[in-house]
Image (cartoon, rainbow, N blue to C red; front, side):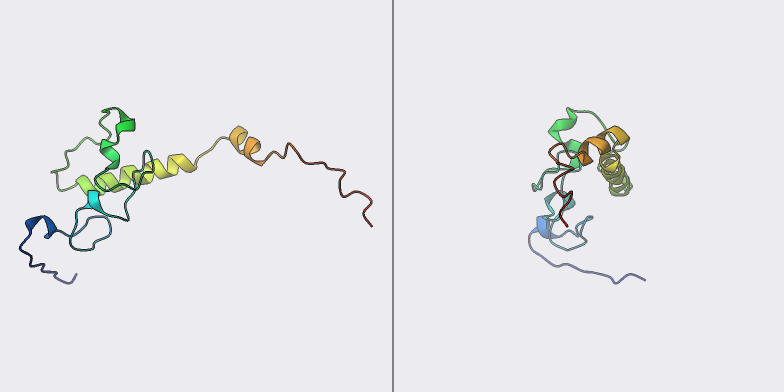
Length: 110
């Protein structure tokens, strides 16, 4: 059983446990450890699904008030990260091509 956490505060805005880092005192969108998975910005108040670079495109079929929102958000963000890691063979070849290499530079150096 998970430990029960009780937060007592006079400021209702601080009476939250972050869905991202699970620390008390702030919301997910204001977490300092959270970054946008669209534009990669670390900016409090900047949420991936509401990033300006999406230009209003709805990326999740559910509302942030839905109890499943944060798990759906985590899955979507993981998919975004995986897509960023996928590069084509041609892109990989361009990244690893050494245009300035003189292949004869170390010949006969014995």
